[in-house]
Amino acid sequence: MDITNSEVKTTTASETKILIILSLAHFTNDGLVLLLPIMLPLIAKDLNLSYIEIGILGGSILISHGIGQFIAGYYSDKIKRKSDLVTCGLILSSISIFLVGVSDSYFQLQALALLVGLTTSVYHPVGFSILSTLFKNKGRALGIHGASGSIGLVTFPLFAGIITEAFDWRLVFKLIPIFGLTAGLFFYALTKNLRETKAVIITKLDMQFFTKDILAIIFVYSTSTMVAFGFTTFLPVKLALLNYSPSMIGFYVSIFFGIGIIGQYIGGIMVDRFDLKRIISLSLIITGFLLYFFIYLLSSIDLILFLVAIGFFCAVLYPANFVQYTNNTPPDTRGTSLGIFFGIGGFFGAFTPIIMGYVAEMIDLNTAFLFLPLICMAGVFAILKF
Image (cartoon, rainbow, N blue to C red; front, side, top):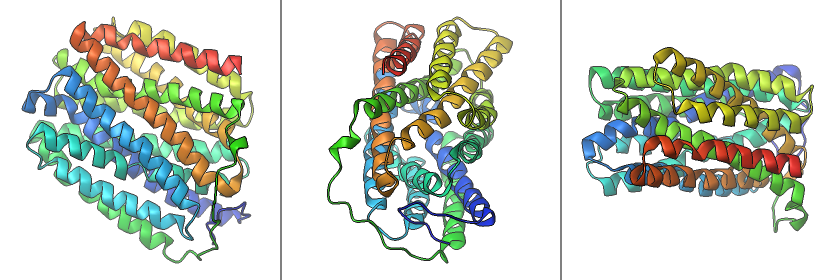
């Protein structure tokens, strides 16, 4: 089998095998990405951090995550074996997350947050580049692949909450990276026999790539990442203020991401059948509406219902955004273009926790959450305008 930088025709069996391998890596990577944000309330309590410091930590992960995605995407178009980049990303991110568990100061935590963001940035531009190149009808494959990431986003918080409840937050960062290292080595074992292919050497980016339509797609994706990153950074903080235990916080976060397993799969199917702009605009409108009322919820039942609804419509967005983007970019530079796509989205998303942290510090946390529905409406305006 080949993993190339140009369009490739494969048999159904080989496509299925690659989809399974990539889904395993996506499951692991997305679970590792969430560990530090989900543990921030407990880390903040232990180190006596302010809302602003929490926001800066969350933003730091995303800034380096965005920069790293551009670098990984660009570099993946210039090497023979993209799969080796995925292996390195899983192993290095596991090591950097382990180091978080032995940090003992805000300065060390800040440096490690940047490292975690950088090392976990590798998978998305590289893995999605492989996936989008191999599959002609992307919707269903993206739905399955995206659902695997959502399963990781569910599984890791649940285990983190249970471990923290029984022991402490530091043990989470010492135990779970063992799984990440194992997954990285397993991924390498499954891909080491893939034939190397000639890489495409990129000398410059075609400026026609930066068209009005493509920039609008990137902006819309950026609004969805801003909402997702802001919400997942401060949802655990809000739940902690409501006196939920670490295991219950992990449970509620898992509900939010768990519905994404269904949402991404359904979103992938919808992509192959309905207008992309309609899917994106309706999902953003409904998400913004739900987020506005979310801040006033107190009962457990209401929280669960709204988390399910918000998580579902956030998840539906991703396959539509991704397919709309890849349909407008050339396959031979797909790693670079996806690095730009995910990188800019992550860069914009990085400001959301910082802004929300500042507003929460100056006013209150509920007011900070009002920033999220405004971002949704900005995304709706962009997708309908362009």
